[in-house]
Length: 424
Image (cartoon, rainbow, N blue to C red; front, side, top):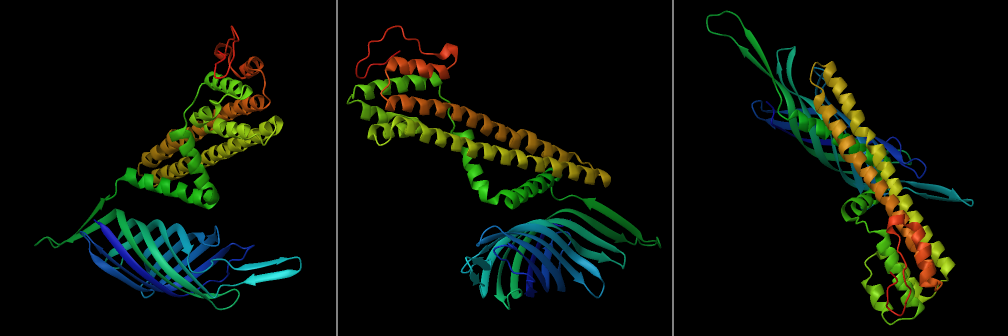
């Protein structure tokens, strides 16, 4: 049973066949080097392979960061036996230098900047398969592992298209399946007995969850990396912070602000400072300053409300797109397990659970909240226009009542307005 598998790999004389440019934001790394790993548990030992092949495709997200897809194979050339195979994805971060080459031409002027040295660090995670012991010339004990590593490296530019690279990586690996083999020759039996015992170290539910979540995260980083922070803010805004407020209460407050502004009451400044709705408070401050007329103020706040709604709707669309990945990976994993005569409910369970019980409900929540806030902000924008134009509170109330349900409308039985008095 493989419990822990720790590897340190050093790759040298790596070649980058194509450097990244402003119009070609990707590059390829081809490396060869030395691989060493130590493992322990019921099976213990170490692996040292001087002939290791490593290829990495790097796609730049900015001048300082990039997304990588990597494959490593440590093969013993004498026996043609691949002792370790790894495939994964991760990130690279450049420091002290720029990651991309700049080569642009504008207005007849060519600007070219090629960094001589580039320094980076990063991480990657993935799945690997290693041989921990061989039995004879045919049997071998293999384990499937989850691999997570940290790396550090530098690239020296040889010419415009090629560079030499030194790459050092240390990784820790957790095995989640293995085969243990026992060869026994009972005394006096004259026969050899071979026993093969298969065990699972990592819980299959945890393995399925890690595969689905890491695949979804990789897809999100590859497609929406620049917009994930905005999406996280929208989730926080609409799920954890959002508090709904009855529209008739907003109308009542705006009508009261209209009366205070109409009669220039000294209580206006205090009421504005105590206003709890940020969108309304910002608009009232504009009204008090008197720098914008009523039509301009209305147009500006309608535009702001529309832009906020677009941002929230985009976050909801991103989540709906991401919701496809857990289900797709879960179905693929289930088919793969069933084809290998194993149970596929683990992948299917997490794929359906993450898609339909987490990501899609978040997207629907954000969209519903965004629609409600957009309607509310349009109401506020109209109220600010009426306040800025010094509309009579009676007319203001009737016009804002058009935004309310019939049962929520403010009924005006009598009008006896003075400074600081409410309409309803």
